[in-house]
Figure (tube, rainbow, N blue to C red):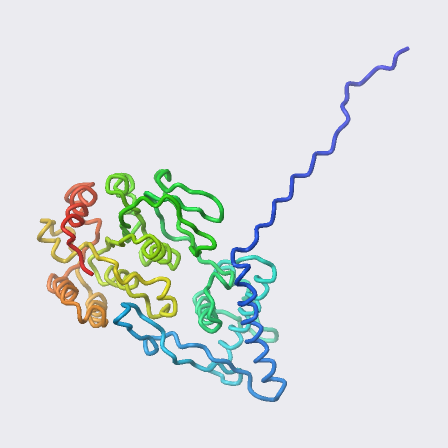
Length: 391
């Protein structure tokens, strides 16, 4: 009698998915130099300890007192001053330990060919020191400052330390970006736009099909959304970016590269207040805390289109848009007015004095009181045509 079959199928083992090819670090050719600099720093500390001398090292001073205004180049630059970080100095021992701790973490990242975020580095170095209740870092701000100290001490970019920051900033317009090998057409980014990464070096980001005539940089995402929805970048053949307030290094580096490598003018649309003025100052000249980065971030030729103190009357805005200047605003405005690059600029002196005389500040969004698209269809086009801006 024939044997009855059960109809069961023999299970076959699923094929293992292919192992993805490991991408080489874009910083591979720089890693050797960075690792060597870290090793030199560590060796000097060990050598001092073994010879009975106090371990210490110098860190370039990142402060206004060590920042120089290079008028001929139009940028802020770091001076030659350094501060000594000593192990047996009670005021410096904590920073001494934190610097070496982060140095060790960076050395490990380089060896493993991996990267970490600023937040990740904070947690990587965070622990309670054995036998005490003392933590290595109180908060991320303290950790971030130590990482910047390491940058200037080693003469390396943050990216070369395998550390990146949170993405903040968006771009859309007549350009194609190649990001880590992936081609991204910024003309087809829908309502969201291309998120500008924190690392915008040529090893990671390349540009293709750059057809724009200029870059319009706006302060906030809310304003950027109006320009994007109205397809301003298409009708005026530009690249549209935003920095979500104070632009990150990634956004500033993107603007700097597009300006330097493709000759695109950078025009800024920011609030009429001391903070909008400061944002422009940072884009144009650089910042005090990052003066060592000015060569690759500052854009001395950047223009300030608006919003301007004169616009309240010129655009016939209502009293509703006025935001009264408080004591902090007034003090900050007067401080900015004394910056060397503003102090000798008659246009900027008039602008800040007019704002102070008005007694109020205004946001770009205030132009919506005229019409939802007034800023994109009237205000900016007319200012661009008249070349009515501050430099």
